[in-house]
Image (tube, rainbow, N blue to C red; front, side, top):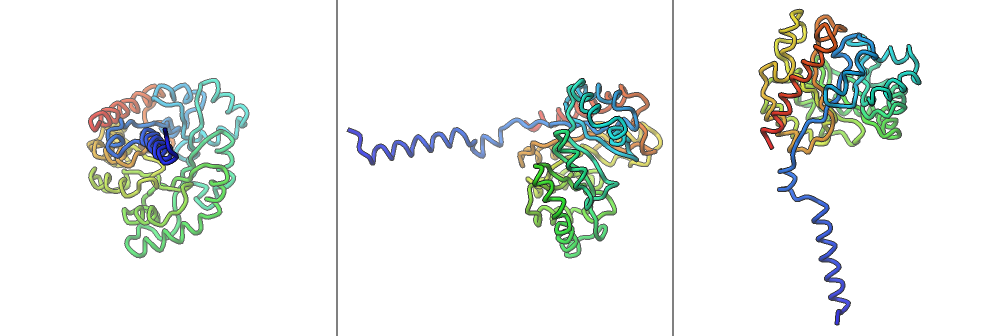
Length: 308
């Protein structure tokens, strides 16, 4: 005969087993295969028309597009020129989704309307920069980041309402630029609707320093640029400029991939570089741009396999 105590004990054991089966252990999580999930930046194709870029998206291993405005591209302006309905139709024709919009020129304090455009097309992430004292560290960085997050509250409120995310890039000559400022951002931020879009290009080119920063960020890391410094972003020689791209430049991305795996990073990675002058494709033809992106993608995927 089963007593009430036996029944409760059995029920508790079954419940515990269900939870155990549903929630992986730390050991199981550490063995989980890590892979990069990609998004394609329209600026990699300069000011080529969306009609020429959209067929390239699937070739780069993704369905998601990051749309850039002037001066790095002009695809955001193209959308307004053709109209939202026509752009939506083009996305459907090519089985592409608008994942992100990058909007530095609007500034982080004026994103409300653009966030609504992002949501209209089903996008998830808006990228911008930061405002405040530049290139600060220590207590000055902490105070500046705290003030910036306070000023961002109206933008964060709209992002929360729309269930989208604002990513702040650690751009050079900005408030959020130094490793200190990035760490303080992660420590002080209280919303899951804003975080750091990490660009290794602007940071020390030490993979272990970058990996430690990624681990500190944890869930505050909302976007990752697969972008190294190489010979810099002011190279007029296209082959030297391409050294900004993973697997073409010399930065070892394996410790970085290991850190991304450790924090269970599941957001997008954007293979990236800047050409000179801004607004031109990274290589003259769309097919060549895609081939260069895929060369880096092959390298990053190998890095992910090496840490498995």
